[in-house]
Length: 308
Ligand SMILES: O=C(O)CCC(=O)C(=O)O
Image (cartoon, rainbow, N blue to C red; front, side, top):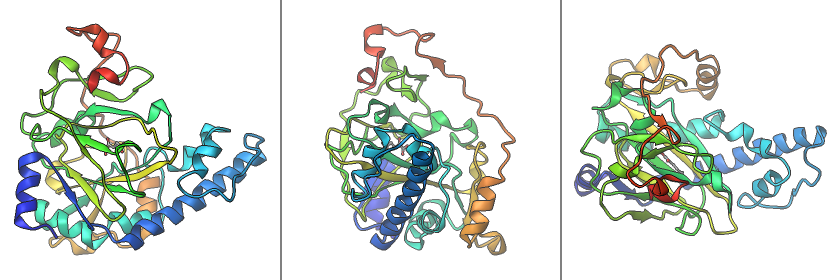
């Protein structure tokens, strides 16, 4: 649970570090689940001749990078919200997180369709996430609603490994103009001409801690210059009123006073909901690509540098 000072800070600054927010057993279970998935994928890729060295003795913070240098397809089972299983379900529905969400959102809590596992591999340019607000990716129906992210490190995330950075107090002015970045930073970036003039704050966090942000908080993560994989999970929640802001994937009811019978309590039901989901709405954002966008200082708009 958050105390009132933490709730006030979250609303005032648009972010909050919550120490010991997440049970370590839940983090460990997710690490174990990921290791099994990666190992299974490594075996498939070995059969296809894409991987020759299995690095079976390498640990969670090294193995995937060693396998990735042989085949980038090693990440397929954990990419883009594809991962389901008992441990991710347990983390998404963990009472400690839902209690915090109930404080912020009230008793009706949707577990957002958009959750991600992020293996930020050392020295890999694609792992750099430029400045953005999550709402820039969402359908605009939730622009006026709170969709808190809880960013959960699966290792001790330091500045060196590329932890989160936020722009404090910049979440009250709505959705800022974004554009689609170039190949080095392929996601959405805040347009540099519209970048708030505020000093970034790095938010290192250890296993068990969580970094909370709003859907309008500008945030990014920079290079991982350590030798370790910076594993994390980012989870989101909303009240049902926020609507279907992430229609490409399935959300589900995580806690409810009004509809307790509809709360998903079993990971297999969660998996079925994810797998069988058919998107009905399209995202209504039309951000320009970097080569079609205009910039006051075009040289600032190449690569991840300009947006940070
Ligand atoms: O984990 C990262 O590096 C980026 C996460 C992010 O952008 C998010 O949680 O919205």
